[in-house]
Length: 439
Image (tube, rainbow, N blue to C red):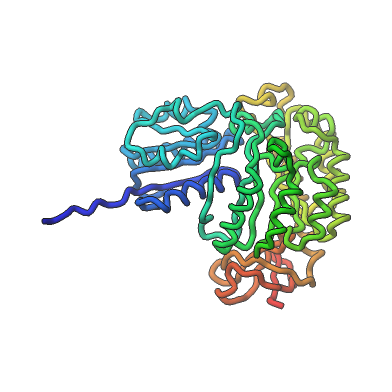
């Protein structure tokens, strides 16, 4: 008797947006990897498509819709699962894209996404899109593999209580919720056992970690517990607000070689009037002091900065305050974003919107400053020897990786050095970083 062999269900996953989304998609893939399914690229024909969307800007929402249409064109009969921040706030817009059923899974139900994706029944919208604002606990997700990377993102926190006037995230992610320390430690040990040499602690509002737990804790205490495990790992912190970088945290970073001398601190504006309109809870002077204190305690510290250009009401004086502040500070690089209206946020309805031509001109000025800051920071470290975590081979020739203070370094070496920490001497500036030589 001939038995027909049933082929495995083909599933494709794609992700837009932040490190938190990337961690969550890695959790989906980890769970799917334990099932009788075949994981295929999103560009390939599949029976199930999972799209983890972003809504931080209107453009991200448009990209999310584009991916949904792409999946529908690839296989109109496929089961389509849409999750993430755009799904959380734009369910009706998503349902209007197609006549066929689309499964929408809210951010508070991502731990159930694989179950939904593999179910035979049609989706019940209400069943998977809950009240994110009322969510009290973080969705439990475990990642057993972060893909072919050397660096793994470890999500320890979700949600935000700040409600900056330009930001949709508190509406899509809910209030701040933290992963219990024991669960963080367990995930860190999984990543270490899988051979990831660097772990990036990440969250939507990382500096609020532990404030909602009982007993309360904080990021510094969690970091101390991780370090006490003595895992063969170096740790990096993702974005922290200026008011959350404490002396105690800096002291711990300075004492531990396992914590990278790197901070990413969003400024957004260097003008106090604009900061108030943004509902940012610090003056420019506080930001300047935090940067100065950080570099004083850790002279090798790299500091990256987010800047939002052309916020409503930003006149030439306000922009000049931002530019002059950044020019005066020992920051290492800038991430410069032009402000764009995000429907559903207070800033979208503010008067005094800045003309596109003015925004473009200001963005160009700050991106030029970014280039100067990077070159100066790289130049300062030429001649020193640094440990590089080797991540890839650049255009088939040179190995490439990052120093602890986030300098991109390329150098000659064998494939055996991939995903290894290698001591390299920094010798020469290049258009995209530094050229080095194995010490």
